[in-house]
Image 1 (cartoon, rainbow, N blue to C red):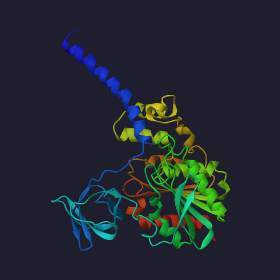
Image 2 (image 1 turned 180 degrees about the horizontal axis):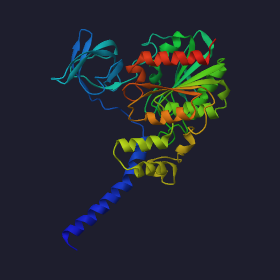
Image 3 (image 1 turned 90 degrees about the horizontal axis):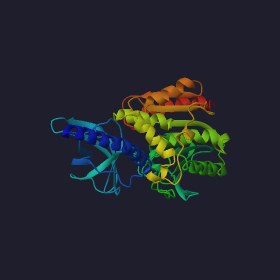
Image 4 (image 1 turned 30 degrees about the horizontal axis):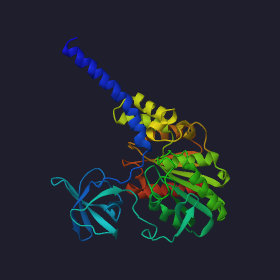
Length: 374
């Protein structure tokens, strides 16, 4: 056997080994919590109510965002773009508030769509409550004690996710509960220390529904973000308290994990077989190799083939690279009566409100008027 043949054989073995490893890597990455986000955003200048940052797709996005730094000890609410210096590669934005820490040149942090770090920063009255788990939550009282919104954040997120839209619901008098769920960094971890993509976390949504039922709720809107939308849709179909649920507000939803994994693999220019392999790892006998105590049946979380039992509004960016809008379009086309879709201009995943708050709020306000015409 000559050297060329040996090299070809070795390359084939290496490629096969890589193809066998990648599904495990995808599966492990999907269910493993991220302890700390990399602080890659760099401040080059700060003062006079503005901050100048190295420009990228995040920092140059239109709208209102957050900058966290110092391992979440510092937080600033960052407003619209004031100017951009393309030669220097920087963007200057308005600083709407510094809630903690000092924003100075040289600061490094990470960009977030959260906007507010807590209800107080959003100017909202609130009460700290604890749901079974124990899972901490924020209760924002409204003038209507019977009508509630439960905010459910996404994978890798926290209850601060829903604070950006909480003022909108507060102005309409609804009472609100912003929940944490197991493994999100606020609530305790799952027994195996992994995310379960809604399978076990659904119990925390059930606990939230039981809590608001005990507070006199007669009508509940579930506002779910990304994975939170999966859990909201599952609750509408399966919850013991589903008779309380009057509607779902789903922002950048994960509606079908299988198709979402396939789309993400395609976006990364990976063969579909690798995404299929990752699904099989999560749901099959090899689940322990990625740290799971129990297999995850992603199909059990897919309710896209049956009509939703309550009205649904989906708010989704047209170029969302993580949860493709095509899945939302197909779901809406399949069930056009109970489901409506609002397509947003270009924005990052779950940042529909951040970049286009008027469109988000006006769309949900019209939908709510149809939901409760009186």
